[in-house]
Length: 266
Image (tube, rainbow, N blue to C red; front, side, top):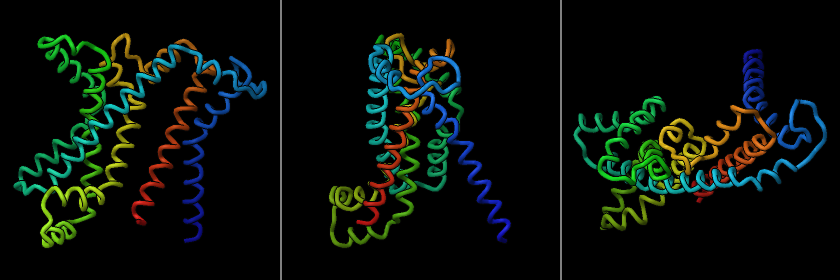
C-alpha cells in the first residue's frame, strides 16, 4: 500500500511538472534580455513596456475584454434563469430528458462544428439585417450561445446539491415567489453563479476557433492576434502577453475560490 501511495505521488508531481513547466518557461523568457534564442541574457522588463505601447495589442486586449465581459454578463443571466426553469419547473420526465440533452449539446460538440454553424446562421441573418456582418456583435452572440450552456450546467448542479427542502420551508412560512428568489434561492446559488460566470469569462477570454470564424477586420482579439503573430515568429512580447493573461487567470481562480469559501462559511 505504501509503495502504491509513493507511486501515485510521483505520478502526480510529474503531471503537475509537465503541465506547468511550459507556462513557467513562457514567463521566464518574457523577462529575458534577448529577442531571439533560448540563452539567458539577463533580466529586463522592456518587453512588457513595449507591450503596453503596442497599439495593435492594446486594441486586441480591449476587444477581448469587451467580448468577455458582455458575453459573460448576458450568458450568466440566461444560464441562471435556464437552470432554475429546468430544475424547478415540473417538466414531464421525457421532456426533461430532451431539455437536458439539448443543454449538453453546446458543451460536447466540437468547436469547429459549432463555429461553422454560427457562420451559416449569421449568413441567413445578414439577409435580414446588415448588423450581422462579421465583427464584434457576431462574436458576442456566438460566445453567449455556447457560454449559456456551461453556466446553466454549473448552476443546475448547485440547485441539485441545495435540494428543495429550504424552498418548501419558505413556502410554508408564506414566502411568495419574488421573496423566495431574492432572499432564499439566489443567495444559496451565489457560489454556483459566480463559478459559472468565471468559467464563461475564461472560455471567452481564450476562445480562438469561434472567434476566428465570426471576427471582422476591426474585432481582432488577443487569441487571434497571438495566432497571427506566432505564424511569423514568437517574440518576447508574445511571451509577456501570454504571461499577463496567465496571471489574470490565476488571480481570477484564486479570487473565485476565496469568494466561494467565504460564502459557504457564512
